[in-house]
Each structure stands twice: as C-alpha cells, then as structure tokens.
Amino acid sequence: MMSTSRPKRAPRVAMAAAIAAVAALAVWLYQDQTQQGDFAADPRPCSLVSAETAARLLAGPTDGVEAMSYCSWAGPGLGSDAQPVLQVQVTRLGVHEAQVSFQRTKEESEGKMGPMTTDLSDFGDEAFSRVRYPSGGRVTNEVFFRRSNVVVAVRYAPVDGDIDRAHSGAYDVAAEAAATLGKGN
Image (cartoon, one colour):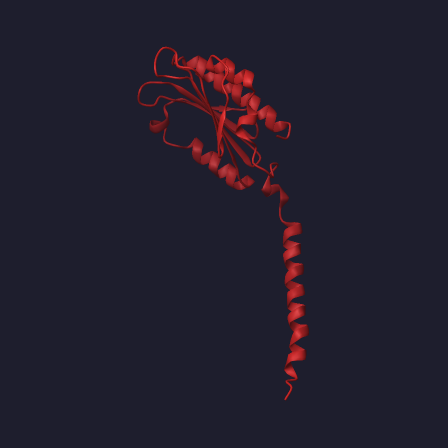
C-alpha cells in the first residue's frame, strides 16, 4: 500500500527549507556592518613598525619576531644581560568588544601598573599611555590605542631606564603603527 501523506509532506519540507535559507540570507546581508569595524583581517604586528624605527630604538638592526598577535624586537645587550625591548600587540575584535577591552585595560589596577596614566588624542578613536615599573626597576612605557575594531599595544623598554626615552620611543612607534593602519594595512 502506498502512503498518500509522503507526497504532501515533501512540498512542506521544501517550503520550510526555502524560508530558512531566505531568513539566513537576510540576516547575513543586513547585519550591522558598523559593529564589525574597519578591519576585516588581522593586521600583521611586525608590519606596523619600520626596520629603521626598530633599529633606532634598539641601537642596531634587528628583525621582529612575530608570534600570533605579537611582534617583538630585542636589541643587543649593552655590556650586561639587559636588552632594550620593543613589542607591538594587535587584537582585532568587533567594535563593541574592542571598546570594552580597551576600557578594561585602561582601568587595570594602578598599583599593579604604576602611577602614571595619561590620555592621548593622537591615535585612532581613543588612546592612553602609562609607565610600568616592574620589579627590577626597569621602566617600560606602554601606549594603547583603539582604531575601530582593532586595539594596539606598544611597549618599549630602553636599557638605560630613561623614562623620557621610553615615552618618546613608545609614542613614535604608536604614531607609526597608527599611520600604517590608516593606510589600510
């Protein structure tokens, strides 16, 4: 015996599948593009700093070593085990997530990070710098900025511990990184 319900069910299943496909297409086409941000791909952190800038800050030519979202450069030691260090970290998120991550970083404990945090207006949508005095007394200046859905962290620690040199070096690298990102890197 043949069942008459099977032929009637096939058009309903096809109609449900078509409705689901149209709904999925509508969601994909009309999702809020502003929340995705300006960057659809992860910017390469080593490409944000020129070899000339890294060599100037690290007292000699050196190649950046990229590992996931970080690029690190280490200069030659100056008669001790200490080396100047430069690091750039790039994190790509949705715009809202980038805003939240940036704010959370900015609000980290002052006791943990050091007393000097300064807002900056020179990079992207929001930016700040701070000085770290980790154990061992070596000063590290950090500049954080957010441009759309990307958060960039620049860290520079000269061997001599000169706070002005640490600040100007991190600032120069952040300015170069922001300019490179602005070119669509």
